[in-house]
Image (cartoon, rainbow, N blue to C red; front, side):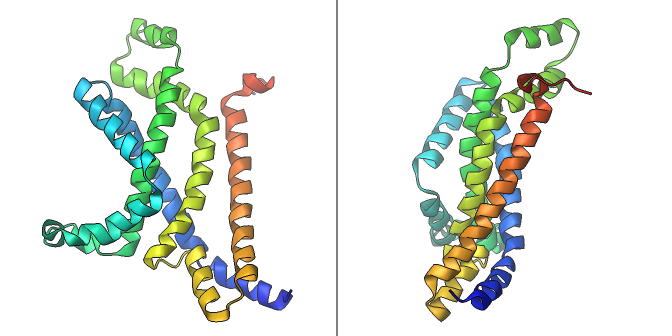
Length: 229
């Protein structure tokens, strides 16, 4: 195996790291906000039906198809092409990011929903007795406890979204996987190039796993037999 080639390929693939991290972090942020909105919609019967249908569609179809539907499919509608959204939706970056956000929101909403159901009813009642309003209870009691409960499952979603960003390379974005695909078409050394890309994704996954484990210990010190200093 050519070590010089591998070292040069690592350097080339790392040029796509900023785009990968950008798509990953923004998709998590946008998906988290949308997931919270979906859970708030479930308070009403109509909103619950809409949120349920949304989750069913985006969890039940492959992310790759969702990317293609947004990037290639929306261009087929004249209303979209003549709207103020077209300058954004004709760009592969915004289409890829939109697909990642919508997909992440479906999974995150179910994770957050489970966390919200795990919040003890007594803590909410205690907040009401102390004079808190609904917004204050949501901000100071319900959400912190729900996030703490959902963190182990959400850490898996974080890693899944990191790997899912590789799919945007199919719509010409030059992230880590996009650069790897281009290099393979030029050199035909697929094994070495894909091995380099896999090592980068693996390193990022290890870092995320360690950070999530640290955060879980910080938020749940009693679970690990520790006390808050």
